Image (tube, rainbow, N blue to C red; front, top):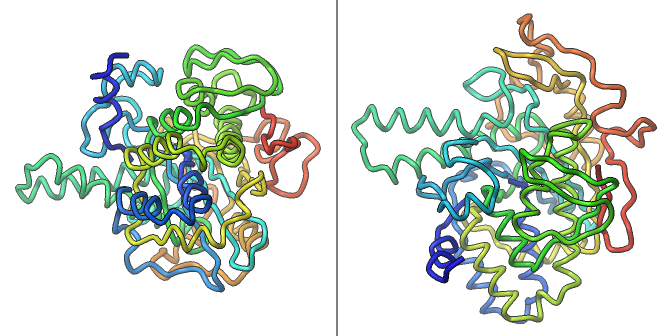
Length: 412
């Protein structure tokens, strides 16, 4: 890639994945490790794109912090412009028109105020839930539906500024996605971080690769995944293929959710072991990645957060995929049928009853019937293994797999 192309592809801001999803751990650990370098913190905190989507929202009690990591399956930058063709080619992600603004990665990271073990709850993207003002639909759609509705509203009012339409549309999308997750889980969301597909690519490259571990070799022409079994370090293009693969995996999207968790664990391990914090070049590359790809809520005191989030390092995050009751169809689309009250109970049991749902979450969410009465959305039984556990399940929702000494889980 030419120097001009590199410059073009690196200067474009983008939101984003897996949430990744996922880059906020890097941001937090960067500040933690460089705590004495105040200028680094100020530079990082002042240059990350900020949002007002959480203004007025209720906060968690007792010093707990809930962070929603949102990964958009978008091939566009923050202004709505397509990513450069050379970047799309590297991402193996197809046209800029594919993906839209679905939140394909949703992870709630819970950091307890008492210094206990952090927990990350992955929400499968096809969970069929209540979306405020929209009825029931896939949880991933909340962002895109609200974005389109806000843009239509502004256009009807005579607004023609494309960037204003994009920015206000995305703010509406963020609020809707956060409200939907908040109501579904029954807990406040204190902060959020959003990035798109390019965020995975840039994060892995900024870290000089992310370690992962596969139980068996995989090859998938759709995502571009082509990896041997065992532990290996993936570059940006390979990392994106790793977190996007679902074809050829026994549980499809649900196995892809485990890939996202493994990527987060590997990125965290790399941040703590590869001299990232003592190497000025690596540190600056990481900061540039945050500037380019991440949007967070305005006024988030990252330094204050990091002081209570030291247990994020060294593989000390407990990963959980929220359970699915079965599978069904709704208006021709595959959906995951879920039990709202079961999800809320699971969350309350694992992170404590002191966190309560924000008043802005619609009360109907806790009492909505499941599954929906429409025949098109009738559930079917899941495969032989529960989607959230192996054939011999651990505690409900807990992820299988052994974490090795480096903090990297082996996944399918």
